[in-house]
Image 1: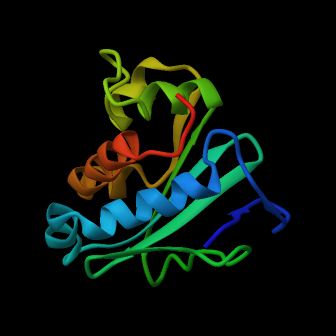
Image 2: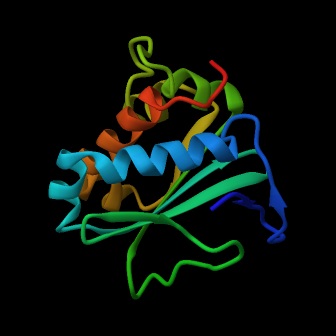
Image 3: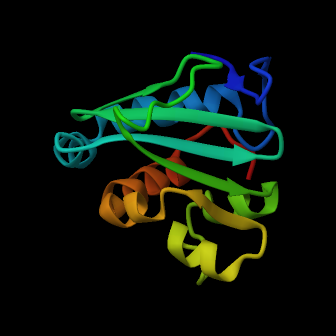
Length: 146
C-alpha cells in the first residue's frame, strides 16, 4: 500500500485521498463485519478519481485490497465502477455528516455537477449496498483533512 495510481502509472500522494487515509479506510472496511458479510458475494473493482489521481480497490469474497499501480481491471473477471469527482464533490461526500443530497453516491451524482458515475452504473445499482457501506466507512475514517 502507499501510492495512488495516476493515468501514467506514476505514484503520487493526493490531498483528497491521502495514502495514510486510504490505508486506514481499507483496514476499517476489512474489520467491518457487515462489509465482510456483504462482500462474500461481491466481485467488484471500484475506481475513485479526483483530478489526475485515482484509487483502484478490488472487492472479492469479503476482502478489499488496492490494485497495484498501473494494473488495469479486466472486465471479464470483475464488474467495474468508476466514480469521478472534483475535490469539493469528494469532500462533500466523505464527511461524517454529509449535507442532504450529498449523502450517498447516487444523490451526489444527481445533484453535484462535478461528480459522475463514469462507468458501471448498472454494477453500481447491483452492488449499491456495499458501495454505500464503503463510502460510509470512508467518511468515518481518520486521516483526511476535513
